[in-house]
Image 1 (tube, rainbow, N blue to C red):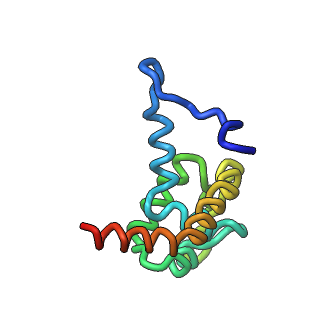
Image 2 (cartoon, rainbow, N blue to C red):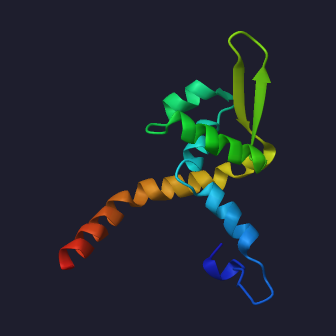
Image 3 (cartoon, rainbow, N blue to C red):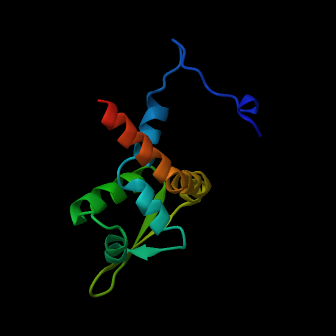
Length: 126
């Protein structure tokens, strides 16, 4: 498949791009990609997620999980135990995002050095 084989949407006066933009903003925000990767192998408890995602605060993890749950990308299962247990898991729609998300992560990792070099060159010319 080449770029000429891909049909790219073009915004028009009649098209309302806001819903798509909101979805893309949710998926590509600072923490969502990390959450998708952390949940790729199945259900994970809240504290385990927090330990896996370096730098995320409890508050930001809670907010992001709620947003992803609202969008139907993850599910939350509460177990009425003492102490309470809550598991998070990708839904079918969330799992369908794994391939594109992992492609982006792989691309970013593969091109990290090239991008850092370009940044250094750009900054030196300024």
